[in-house]
Each structure stands twice: as structure tokens, then as C-alpha cells.
Length: 199
Image (tube, rainbow, N blue to C red):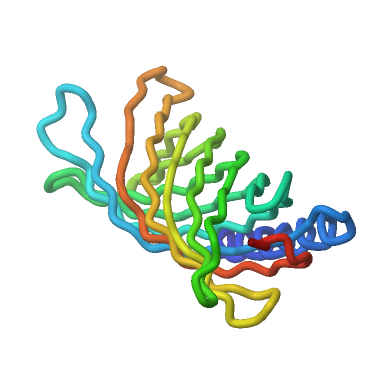
């Protein structure tokens, strides 16, 4: 619990740091933080049972517009998951990922701005069994999604996105690897410091 609290504080501090740093630049237009809930299923080659997972994902990010309606940026992602394979005991995972993303905003309809997004990056994961044994993994991931920003004010929007993600994990000690893929529904918010979403 102590580790979780420290990690959560570090993420919040990082989100504030990113906002402050980019807010001082002329191209900084937004920062968001997502709290996601999802369900995934993965199956190793040759395995008879799939792994079922439930997770909570915290995702602070910042971006700037290269041109009207096209934004690029980076995000940090930290999530905790609880997994179970068949009838075996469940295990927990702690994951950290970092990488770039690009987003294209479509024309505004009323106060709603649809968008499409691509992302990718690297990370690491630590799995902990109920026995206390730990396994470490390296991560490569890519994702794509569509969503919309719902503007409640000129500079503030709530966001929702349906996102598909593919992830490859490689065990650092044993060298084995496996793939994870699934659909996630993301919710978050964004602050826009310059009005660049013009028609």
C-alpha cells in the first residue's frame, strides 16, 4: 500500500510538472489525466487457459499542436492489474509505460470535438505472485483509438475514447515473450491553453 501511495503521488507531481513546463511554451495547448477501467484477455502460445485481467490505469499526458487540429505529445502510464489463469491463484502486476502519441481533431459539432489517436512506446512490468515471487518484463506497445472532447468551457473538456492496444512483453530473466491485446474505454479531461481548434 505504501508503494502504491508513493507511486500515485509521483504521477500527480509528474502531471503538474508537465503542465507547468509546457504551459510556459507558446505551443502548449493541453494536458490530461485519465483514470481507466478495463478487462483484457491474453493467451500464450500452446497454453490451454487464457489469462483474465481487471486493471486501473492512471495516465497523465501533455501535448502541443504542430498545426491546426494536429497535436503531438507524450504520456506517462502507470497501472495496477489483478490477473487469474484458469483455476490458479490470482497475481498482481505493476506496469509503467512511456511514449509519444499523435491526435487529429475533426470539426467541432456544437461543443463536441471528435478525434482519432495513435500511440506507442516502451515500458516495464513486475508480476508478483501470492507466494511473493516476482517476474520482470520489458514492454513494447502500440495503440489506436477514436473519441471525443466535450467542452464544458473554452479551455476545459471532458474526454472519452474507445482504444485498441497491442502489447508485447519479454521476460527479463527467462527470455520468453507473450502478446496482449484488447479494447479499453478511456475517460479523462484536458485543459487547452491556446485556442487552436478553429474551423
